[in-house]
Image (tube, rainbow, N blue to C red; front, side, top):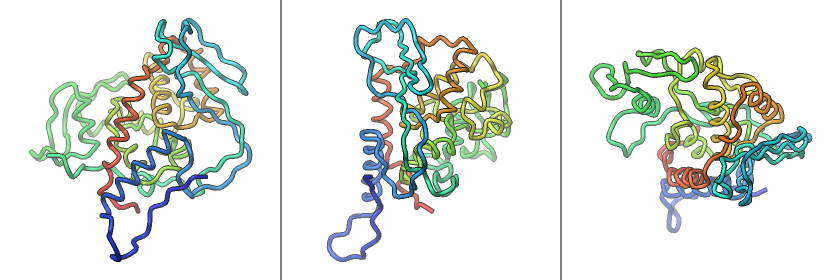
Length: 306
Protein backbone atom coordinates (compact mmCIF):
# COMPACT_ATOMS: atom_id res chain seq x y z
CA UNK A 1 0.00 0.00 0.00
CA UNK A 2 1.40 3.34 -1.04
CA UNK A 3 1.41 5.81 1.79
CA UNK A 4 2.14 9.53 1.93
CA UNK A 5 2.61 10.87 5.41
CA UNK A 6 3.18 14.48 6.44
CA UNK A 7 6.79 14.82 7.64
CA UNK A 8 7.32 16.00 11.19
CA UNK A 9 9.16 19.26 11.81
CA UNK A 10 12.85 18.44 11.72
CA UNK A 11 14.06 21.76 13.09
CA UNK A 12 16.03 24.38 11.22
CA UNK A 13 19.08 22.39 10.19
CA UNK A 14 19.92 22.73 6.50
CA UNK A 15 17.53 24.31 4.03
CA UNK A 16 14.01 24.32 5.42
CA UNK A 17 11.02 23.95 3.10
CA UNK A 18 8.38 26.54 4.00
CA UNK A 19 5.42 24.95 5.72
CA UNK A 20 2.86 26.33 3.30
CA UNK A 21 4.74 25.12 0.25
CA UNK A 22 5.12 21.68 1.81
CA UNK A 23 1.41 21.56 2.59
CA UNK A 24 0.48 22.47 -0.97
CA UNK A 25 2.86 19.83 -2.32
CA UNK A 26 1.25 17.20 -0.13
CA UNK A 27 -2.20 18.27 -1.31
CA UNK A 28 -1.14 17.80 -4.93
CA UNK A 29 0.37 14.41 -4.12
CA UNK A 30 -2.79 13.35 -2.34
CA UNK A 31 -5.06 14.32 -5.23
CA UNK A 32 -2.74 12.83 -7.83
CA UNK A 33 -2.72 9.40 -6.21
CA UNK A 34 -6.44 9.44 -5.48
CA UNK A 35 -7.38 10.17 -9.07
CA UNK A 36 -4.55 8.69 -11.08
CA UNK A 37 -4.10 5.43 -9.23
CA UNK A 38 -6.88 5.02 -6.70
CA UNK A 39 -4.30 3.81 -4.19
CA UNK A 40 -4.60 4.43 -0.49
CA UNK A 41 -2.53 7.34 0.78
CA UNK A 42 -3.12 6.91 4.48
CA UNK A 43 -1.99 4.51 7.15
CA UNK A 44 -5.32 4.98 8.95
CA UNK A 45 -6.78 1.67 7.83
CA UNK A 46 -7.41 -1.84 9.04
CA UNK A 47 -8.29 -4.96 7.11
CA UNK A 48 -11.92 -6.00 6.94
CA UNK A 49 -13.47 -9.33 5.83
CA UNK A 50 -14.40 -9.58 2.19
CA UNK A 51 -16.91 -6.96 1.16
CA UNK A 52 -18.74 -5.96 -2.01
CA UNK A 53 -18.56 -2.53 -3.58
CA UNK A 54 -18.52 -0.78 -6.95
CA UNK A 55 -16.53 1.97 -8.62
CA UNK A 56 -17.82 3.92 -11.61
CA UNK A 57 -15.55 3.25 -14.59
CA UNK A 58 -13.44 6.13 -15.80
CA UNK A 59 -12.92 4.55 -19.22
CA UNK A 60 -15.12 5.81 -22.09
CA UNK A 61 -17.24 3.38 -23.99
CA UNK A 62 -15.82 2.26 -27.31
CA UNK A 63 -16.80 4.17 -30.45
CA UNK A 64 -19.79 2.61 -32.16
CA UNK A 65 -21.81 2.04 -29.00
CA UNK A 66 -25.18 3.47 -29.95
CA UNK A 67 -26.21 4.35 -26.41
CA UNK A 68 -29.76 3.20 -27.08
CA UNK A 69 -30.10 0.90 -24.10
CA UNK A 70 -28.80 0.18 -20.66
CA UNK A 71 -28.74 -3.24 -19.03
CA UNK A 72 -28.21 -4.30 -15.45
CA UNK A 73 -26.61 -7.66 -14.90
CA UNK A 74 -26.82 -9.67 -11.71
CA UNK A 75 -25.71 -7.95 -8.48
CA UNK A 76 -22.45 -9.90 -8.72
CA UNK A 77 -21.55 -8.33 -12.06
CA UNK A 78 -23.77 -5.28 -12.34
CA UNK A 79 -22.80 -3.20 -15.34
CA UNK A 80 -24.97 -0.60 -17.03
CA UNK A 81 -23.82 1.30 -20.11
CA UNK A 82 -25.86 4.28 -21.16
CA UNK A 83 -24.91 7.27 -23.32
CA UNK A 84 -26.63 9.95 -25.28
CA UNK A 85 -26.89 8.84 -28.88
CA UNK A 86 -23.66 9.52 -30.79
CA UNK A 87 -21.42 10.53 -27.89
CA UNK A 88 -19.41 7.32 -28.12
CA UNK A 89 -15.94 7.63 -26.62
CA UNK A 90 -16.51 11.32 -25.80
CA UNK A 91 -18.52 10.47 -22.67
CA UNK A 92 -18.38 8.37 -19.55
CA UNK A 93 -21.39 6.33 -18.55
CA UNK A 94 -22.49 6.90 -14.95
CA UNK A 95 -24.00 3.42 -14.99
CA UNK A 96 -20.90 1.52 -16.04
CA UNK A 97 -19.72 0.10 -12.72
CA UNK A 98 -16.91 -2.30 -11.87
CA UNK A 99 -17.82 -4.81 -9.19
CA UNK A 100 -15.33 -5.73 -6.47
CA UNK A 101 -15.52 -8.46 -3.89
CA UNK A 102 -12.34 -8.44 -1.89
CA UNK A 103 -10.69 -7.84 1.41
CA UNK A 104 -9.96 -4.15 1.73
CA UNK A 105 -8.78 -1.66 4.27
CA UNK A 106 -11.35 0.52 6.01
CA UNK A 107 -10.92 3.48 8.32
CA UNK A 108 -10.25 2.62 11.92
CA UNK A 109 -11.15 6.13 13.08
CA UNK A 110 -14.84 6.89 13.54
CA UNK A 111 -16.08 9.76 11.41
CA UNK A 112 -15.59 13.19 12.98
CA UNK A 113 -16.72 16.18 10.87
CA UNK A 114 -14.48 18.79 12.44
CA UNK A 115 -11.44 16.54 12.76
CA UNK A 116 -11.58 14.96 9.31
CA UNK A 117 -13.11 17.71 7.13
CA UNK A 118 -12.85 20.92 9.13
CA UNK A 119 -15.59 23.54 8.87
CA UNK A 120 -16.68 26.20 6.39
CA UNK A 121 -13.64 28.22 5.42
CA UNK A 122 -13.04 31.84 4.51
CA UNK A 123 -10.26 31.85 1.94
CA UNK A 124 -7.54 34.24 3.10
CA UNK A 125 -6.74 35.44 -0.43
CA UNK A 126 -10.22 36.56 -1.50
CA UNK A 127 -11.48 40.11 -1.06
CA UNK A 128 -14.45 39.47 1.22
CA UNK A 129 -15.36 38.06 4.61
CA UNK A 130 -17.75 35.39 3.35
CA UNK A 131 -17.23 31.74 4.22
CA UNK A 132 -18.29 28.89 1.94
CA UNK A 133 -21.85 28.82 3.28
CA UNK A 134 -22.34 32.51 2.52
CA UNK A 135 -20.86 32.15 -0.96
CA UNK A 136 -23.21 29.28 -1.83
CA UNK A 137 -26.20 31.25 -0.54
CA UNK A 138 -25.20 34.22 -2.72
CA UNK A 139 -24.69 31.96 -5.74
CA UNK A 140 -27.97 30.06 -5.37
CA UNK A 141 -30.30 32.97 -4.62
CA UNK A 142 -32.29 34.01 -7.67
CA UNK A 143 -32.52 37.56 -6.31
CA UNK A 144 -29.90 39.84 -4.85
CA UNK A 145 -29.24 38.88 -1.24
CA UNK A 146 -29.12 41.15 1.80
CA UNK A 147 -26.67 40.76 4.63
CA UNK A 148 -26.92 40.87 8.40
CA UNK A 149 -25.81 43.98 10.27
CA UNK A 150 -24.87 45.80 7.09
CA UNK A 151 -21.73 43.72 6.62
CA UNK A 152 -21.36 41.49 3.60
CA UNK A 153 -20.30 38.50 5.67
CA UNK A 154 -23.47 36.69 6.74
CA UNK A 155 -26.39 36.40 4.34
CA UNK A 156 -29.77 37.41 5.75
CA UNK A 157 -32.38 37.24 3.02
CA UNK A 158 -32.67 36.19 -0.60
CA UNK A 159 -34.78 33.86 -2.75
CA UNK A 160 -33.89 30.17 -2.77
CA UNK A 161 -35.74 27.54 -4.78
CA UNK A 162 -35.22 24.27 -2.97
CA UNK A 163 -35.14 21.29 -5.36
CA UNK A 164 -35.75 18.81 -2.53
CA UNK A 165 -39.11 20.23 -1.44
CA UNK A 166 -39.96 22.35 -4.50
CA UNK A 167 -40.64 25.26 -2.14
CA UNK A 168 -39.25 28.78 -2.18
CA UNK A 169 -37.59 30.30 0.88
CA UNK A 170 -36.65 33.88 1.62
CA UNK A 171 -34.78 33.67 4.92
CA UNK A 172 -31.30 32.18 5.12
CA UNK A 173 -32.35 30.72 8.48
CA UNK A 174 -34.50 28.22 6.57
CA UNK A 175 -31.61 27.11 4.37
CA UNK A 176 -28.79 24.66 4.95
CA UNK A 177 -25.97 23.92 2.52
CA UNK A 178 -26.08 20.27 1.55
CA UNK A 179 -22.99 18.31 0.56
CA UNK A 180 -24.64 16.37 -2.23
CA UNK A 181 -22.71 13.26 -1.25
CA UNK A 182 -22.64 13.81 2.53
CA UNK A 183 -19.32 14.09 4.30
CA UNK A 184 -19.83 10.95 6.36
CA UNK A 185 -20.83 8.95 3.29
CA UNK A 186 -17.79 10.27 1.43
CA UNK A 187 -15.53 9.44 4.37
CA UNK A 188 -16.77 5.87 4.58
CA UNK A 189 -16.64 5.34 0.80
CA UNK A 190 -13.05 6.43 0.30
CA UNK A 191 -12.31 9.88 1.72
CA UNK A 192 -10.83 8.32 4.86
CA UNK A 193 -7.78 7.59 2.67
CA UNK A 194 -7.25 11.26 1.85
CA UNK A 195 -5.25 13.70 3.92
CA UNK A 196 -6.98 16.51 5.83
CA UNK A 197 -6.37 19.12 3.14
CA UNK A 198 -8.10 17.09 0.44
CA UNK A 199 -11.06 16.38 2.72
CA UNK A 200 -11.27 20.07 3.61
CA UNK A 201 -11.31 20.90 -0.10
CA UNK A 202 -14.13 18.39 -0.62
CA UNK A 203 -16.12 19.99 2.20
CA UNK A 204 -15.76 23.47 0.68
CA UNK A 205 -15.57 22.74 -3.05
CA UNK A 206 -17.49 25.22 -5.22
CA UNK A 207 -16.02 24.23 -8.57
CA UNK A 208 -19.09 22.15 -9.38
CA UNK A 209 -22.54 23.72 -8.80
CA UNK A 210 -24.06 20.39 -7.79
CA UNK A 211 -21.42 19.61 -5.15
CA UNK A 212 -22.88 22.05 -2.60
CA UNK A 213 -26.51 23.20 -2.91
CA UNK A 214 -28.92 25.34 -0.91
CA UNK A 215 -31.85 23.33 0.44
CA UNK A 216 -34.46 23.51 3.17
CA UNK A 217 -32.86 22.78 6.54
CA UNK A 218 -35.43 20.17 7.57
CA UNK A 219 -35.02 18.27 4.30
CA UNK A 220 -31.25 18.31 4.67
CA UNK A 221 -31.50 17.00 8.23
CA UNK A 222 -33.84 14.24 7.07
CA UNK A 223 -31.29 13.27 4.42
CA UNK A 224 -28.41 13.38 6.92
CA UNK A 225 -25.68 11.00 5.69
CA UNK A 226 -28.04 8.67 3.83
CA UNK A 227 -27.39 7.26 0.37
CA UNK A 228 -30.13 6.96 -2.31
CA UNK A 229 -31.16 3.50 -1.14
CA UNK A 230 -32.09 5.09 2.20
CA UNK A 231 -33.40 8.53 1.19
CA UNK A 232 -34.63 10.38 -1.87
CA UNK A 233 -35.98 13.93 -2.06
CA UNK A 234 -39.68 14.33 -1.27
CA UNK A 235 -40.03 16.13 -4.61
CA UNK A 236 -40.57 13.23 -7.05
CA UNK A 237 -39.84 15.42 -10.07
CA UNK A 238 -36.26 15.84 -8.88
CA UNK A 239 -35.43 12.23 -8.07
CA UNK A 240 -33.95 11.20 -11.43
CA UNK A 241 -31.76 14.31 -11.49
CA UNK A 242 -30.81 13.62 -7.87
CA UNK A 243 -29.61 10.12 -8.76
CA UNK A 244 -27.61 11.45 -11.71
CA UNK A 245 -25.94 14.15 -9.64
CA UNK A 246 -25.12 11.66 -6.89
CA UNK A 247 -23.33 9.45 -9.40
CA UNK A 248 -21.49 12.41 -10.94
CA UNK A 249 -20.04 13.42 -7.56
CA UNK A 250 -19.07 9.82 -6.80
CA UNK A 251 -17.32 9.50 -10.16
CA UNK A 252 -15.46 12.82 -9.99
CA UNK A 253 -14.10 12.12 -6.49
CA UNK A 254 -13.59 8.38 -7.07
CA UNK A 255 -15.86 7.31 -4.24
CA UNK A 256 -17.20 3.79 -3.85
CA UNK A 257 -20.78 2.60 -4.11
CA UNK A 258 -21.79 -0.01 -1.56
CA UNK A 259 -23.70 -3.07 -2.71
CA UNK A 260 -26.86 -1.79 -1.01
CA UNK A 261 -26.40 1.69 -2.47
CA UNK A 262 -25.94 0.39 -6.01
CA UNK A 263 -28.95 -1.90 -5.73
CA UNK A 264 -31.03 0.97 -4.37
CA UNK A 265 -30.01 3.23 -7.26
CA UNK A 266 -30.88 0.48 -9.74
CA UNK A 267 -34.35 0.09 -8.22
CA UNK A 268 -34.96 3.84 -8.03
CA UNK A 269 -34.03 4.32 -11.69
CA UNK A 270 -36.61 1.74 -12.68
CA UNK A 271 -39.26 2.87 -10.20
CA UNK A 272 -39.15 6.48 -11.37
CA UNK A 273 -38.74 5.66 -15.08
CA UNK A 274 -35.52 7.65 -15.28
CA UNK A 275 -34.24 8.10 -18.87
CA UNK A 276 -31.02 6.12 -18.74
CA UNK A 277 -29.67 7.74 -21.90
CA UNK A 278 -29.07 10.86 -19.82
CA UNK A 279 -26.81 9.15 -17.31
CA UNK A 280 -23.48 10.16 -18.74
CA UNK A 281 -20.95 12.94 -18.42
CA UNK A 282 -18.92 14.34 -21.28
CA UNK A 283 -15.31 13.32 -20.83
CA UNK A 284 -14.14 16.93 -21.20
CA UNK A 285 -16.41 17.97 -18.31
CA UNK A 286 -15.06 15.12 -16.22
CA UNK A 287 -11.45 16.05 -17.00
CA UNK A 288 -12.14 19.73 -16.34
CA UNK A 289 -13.45 18.85 -12.90
CA UNK A 290 -10.40 16.77 -12.08
CA UNK A 291 -8.13 19.58 -13.28
CA UNK A 292 -10.01 22.18 -11.25
CA UNK A 293 -9.75 20.04 -8.12
CA UNK A 294 -6.01 19.72 -8.68
CA UNK A 295 -5.73 23.48 -9.18
CA UNK A 296 -7.64 24.07 -5.92
CA UNK A 297 -5.38 21.84 -3.85
CA UNK A 298 -4.02 24.76 -1.83
CA UNK A 299 -7.46 26.04 -0.78
CA UNK A 300 -7.15 24.70 2.78
CA UNK A 301 -3.37 24.95 3.02
CA UNK A 302 -3.62 27.79 5.55
CA UNK A 303 -5.36 25.53 8.07
CA UNK A 304 -3.85 23.19 10.65
CA UNK A 305 -5.32 19.69 10.98
CA UNK A 306 -6.78 18.98 14.38
